[in-house]
View 1 (tube, rainbow, N blue to C red):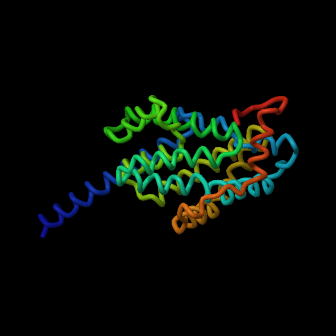
View 2: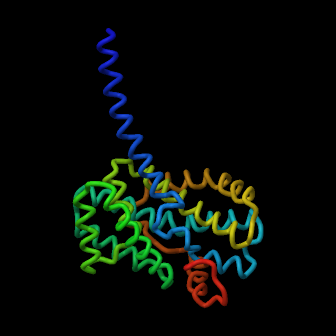
View 3: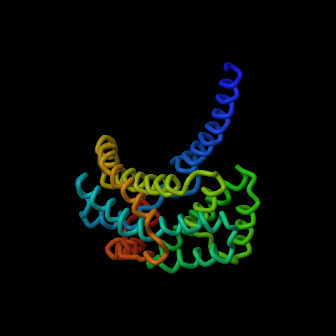
Length: 246
């Protein structure tokens, strides 16, 4: 009996180690110290702040929920999910289409540029971290300018390579996006650190709910109805002073 237990325990530990390593790698790419520049973007929020539309914790939470459900859920999150499955099938034509759609649905110039710039820096940073020829091939296609290299698509490809499930891939992307907005608001409004922590904690339920929603969506649900945020993103490049790139 002892031998069977040891074998079972050894197998379980091997599986757990693989899973845990993938989770740790997923956490690493969302760390604020990970050098892809995602935390230098406000995606239009800085315009709201300068127009005094975000002055309280409640207003910050409202903005983040709007960004979450009207921008991410029906935009990048769907593209991540689709890219994840396309990467699993090694469907280059499908991934190319997703990359084009990702750019087409972003109306503001800064939003398009942010998506590509973060994506390119992301793939340059993660490619040396793992042996995954398909991701390396995609990086080469970006360098040959065959595709733009939007972040959502690259993120979906990378998460498929990690072996994490698509729900966790989408949910951690959403969490990191909202966390970045909250931390940028703490700097720009400014808020105290405790206010930022409280706001993010109150948004956790919304993040989980948003990720669950994405699991039932398809490409037919891809849309951009975050018009206020898009307009704010368009106005951002003309602000007199700016802390953030977008």
